Amino acid sequence: LPELEKAIEMEDLALNPPVANELTPQVIALDEGRDRAYQALMSRVRSYAFDEDSKLRNAAARIEDVAARYGNVIRMNYDKETAAIENFLTDLKGENIRPLVTKLGVTALVDRLEKNNKAFADFFLR
Image 1: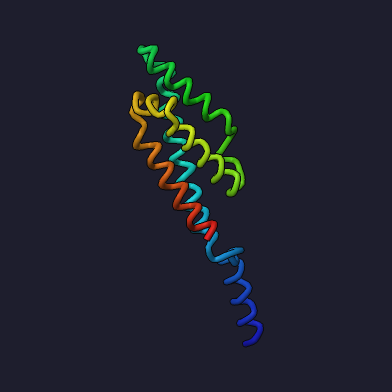
Image 2: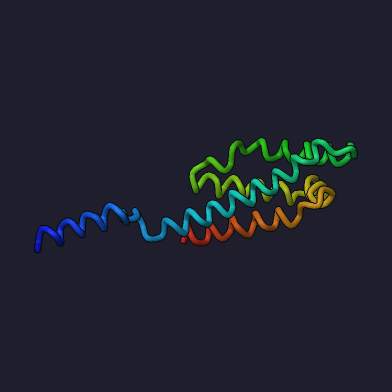
């Protein structure tokens, strides 16, 4: 009987490996949420590169230039990504860039990124 119990315990461990931290799944889900928000914003901005309206193309190019300052944000570690997104959002809200965000109609996507980044930071840094 003890051998059977040991075998069952080993099987349980193999099928359900311990999670490094009970909070890890939540951290991963929150990080994926902000990654998707960032990708949605940047995909929408990049789509204007092909617009017939040169003002929209130029607005998108300027926002892409701002994003380029921060590198590949979604590949950064959690702390760096949080800070990079916060700085990016600050830039997007600046007096020179905010009108471009409005012109492209991506304000809701910027708000989504801010909300998701804040949710991650509040959970991860608590």
